[in-house]
Image (cartoon, rainbow, N blue to C red; front, side, top):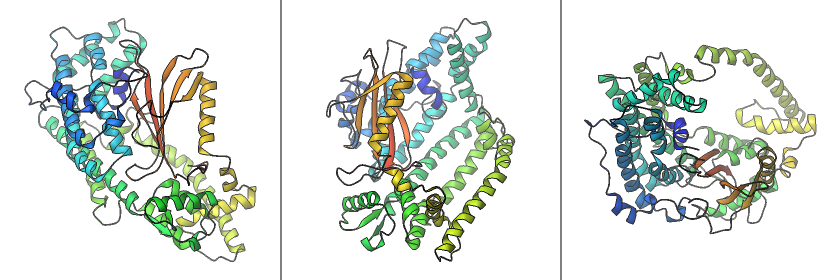
Length: 501
């Protein structure tokens, strides 16, 4: 998709184009020719499919200099838009912003890959240094009076313009995004807003890295005698995870949801279930160097101060203003409407669990680490539904094939695996498929899949767009990825997932 559409969701949080007032000192651009020759992260993408990220050329030593270079050049690039002597128009302002940011976006692809998929202590040190600089870039964009004046002029002329509906929508989103992120602030409020943005960027980075450190650091190794209740597929994966960590002969329960949830569901070792549950739910809350309690308090305080500068009563009011709920009171009303029914259902479920526990001669006071274990027993007793039996039909590769089938039926897509070595990847676990139009064979894009948990990869599941579909200056095809954290099984063994993974 076009650069401006790619920018829109993050126009007030990351790139938003990029520019600065001429009276402000810009972040100094690096020498373009020299850096491109020595830093592969700055090079245009080449190769098949319209060019692809050079993941095989990624070196952490190049990360900081590449990001500093494109920040500086991005500021200069969009500064030209802000200072264009021609009257503001959709073409020379909004479309010009669409065309900006391509080099910055390419480097950010590498940066985000390190941050989300390949983090390390060395990268985190660089990330802490660069996070406030990225926030400074954001502030210089949204607080650039010349740029916002041009956007406001184009926005004010919408009623008299001949723009298409999609173009009008784009103008509105760009304008409102800038306004919501402090473009109209003046004087001391403007300076404080920019300062808060940099402080928050640092705190967000610290928060995420603290959670990641606890996910990496809290691994429970258990013996064969402690495997009671665990399915064979999970045992194999836990053995492989232990071997990877130099503990062959043991079984590793890693501190990620894809390992924790099945352990809590099937393990008959209640003491171990409690230990695993506490490790997972206390990430960033252990009173050590990775503790996030002070970080959270400071984030909340700064968020409140920031939105007060914008004229909102609280963060929730600002956050919901452009969402369906519009007001916090409406969101509370919805939650209060469903709460009685939800609470009643929980009480029914716990009663069923308690009955099974008592029938088995177990006298316990139910705790959070018991819920999944006994919920599974209730499913078996009431519905003859065995989650582990269902998992046999939920092989990761089969689910992927089912997803391909649905995409083909709905959108006419076909997926063909790309030959190994044809497209660079950043880790051996990553696989790539070419997406084409069924029947015509027209190339649509590439789809990257990074499915497994590992050290340095943040938990959860997410999608990335390395390059959006773009028809601004000739068609540019999409490069997208899906990332998840399934636990890799033993070599050659299928990876089984549950319906709530």
